[in-house]
Image (cartoon, rainbow, N blue to C red; front, side, top):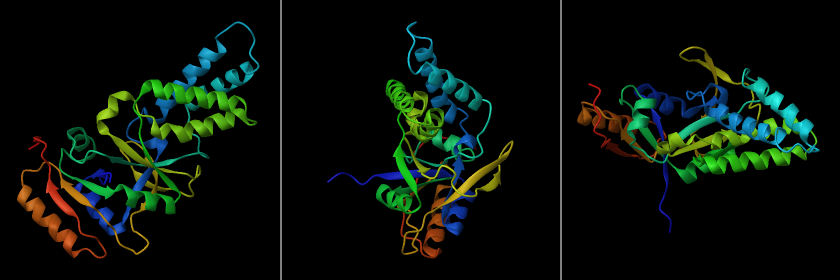
Amino acid sequence: MPARRILYHYTTLGGLLGIIKCRCLWTTNIFYLNDSTEFNYALELARGNLRERFGGPTVANQHDQFYADALLTLDGLAHSVPEAFSLHVGSFSANGDSLSQWRAYTHNGIGFSLGFDEAYLQSLAKRQKYELVECEYDEIGHKRAISVLIAESAESTERELNLFLELLRLSPRLKHPKFEEEKEWRIVSEDMGHGKPKFRAGKSTLIPYSEFKLEGEDGMLRIAEICIGPTPHPQLAMASVTQLINRADKLGPANIRVSDVPYRSW
């Protein structure tokens, strides 16, 4: 029997309190994620493939006009954010105690990684019209997938629109190889418009987001494991988190542990 897989969401002290209170995660519009290369990475691969096709053999190709039009469309996307089409994304990692993740998603390592059972997340995603996907870090595989997507779009009716929509759907799975250590998984909304977003304050702009409910059909919130980030007070942190979990309503039991990462920010 395969081992049970736990996927972890890194968050701050306030993030844990917010998750337990609202019983949800915030999923962010893909164009507003912290990593500026998110959609642009897939976009650049597609633009490169189109340039190769359009500037390839001198013999005229029946799809040359599509390649040219699609290239203009994608060039325009590099400088604008389409309002009508968006995907909302939430991030997890297969590694619950990662130095790079503590640095990226907590305040100097002070925070938590919340572990959720993969099957539990799958059921929540299905009910809310999301998909749980594992990110891919193989650049050769990325280029192959983009090439297939462009070839299929060339045979469709609304070719440029189809290419953009399929590229948008594919992009959350494709991560630049330099991020491979993150071992990222994602929940990705299936609805391209995804209703009316809410907004939160970011560092330089307002950020559109949606709520991904973490409650099961029985109203229980099930966190399989909580890893406490590097802290100067591990015993106090363990005690307070244990009290929080024991006193919260409709919250299943969670295994609580302290990070083994030798990282100090104090």
